Length: 259
Image (cartoon, rainbow, N blue to C red; front, side, top):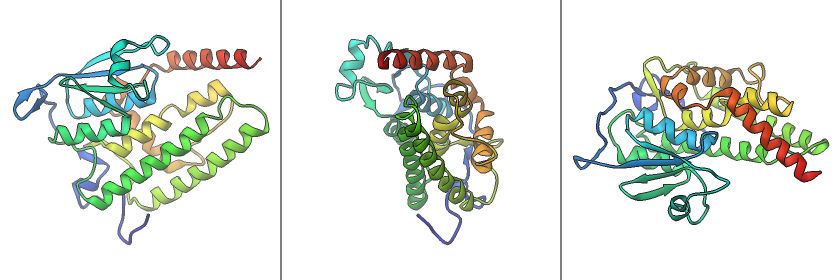
């Protein structure tokens, strides 16, 4: 996707900057002037649940968080998401919404006050969706290979790195400035990027190989670093040591099952 003018961001238009101008959090959630009930079913280590948490906090929406045991899923979770039976599930006034990217758009379209998660401009909105889908696609491809060994994993990692090279080059070319959130709030693409790459150092520690380095991807690394300083993201991100232990346990279980 290309265009003569700068694509993802621009300092000339607030709608296509790194995010939206900060606004005071709303004390009440409302639709048509009435209070609403917002609940989020999730699992603390899920990057997809992380997206919904960050979005709700950025929009200033009060919500009840319900931790799910994915080894013993609740009847409510199975009722709310009978197709995939997965988290996250956002329940708004009793109505369930599944799939993290759909949840982000629902939040933005339902609570229309700023800050906005997606740009108003249709073309830029499409570009944000495109890059979010691209990043998620290659991340999912890699995650399926993390527990493999030998030449197979090396091939998958090399394929992943080449696709990330494309993201680094083209996303940098579409932006004049380095990402900054001192006066802005993160949006849709920012949230997706952080959910996928915000813990890249943990992957190396747990699995023993590098999938992302600041040397190879300076633009994306500076973007992630800027996001990591945002209060709503700091408050939502899972504890690093706890996440490392969680992934080690999963890896051990997988290795034992393969033995």
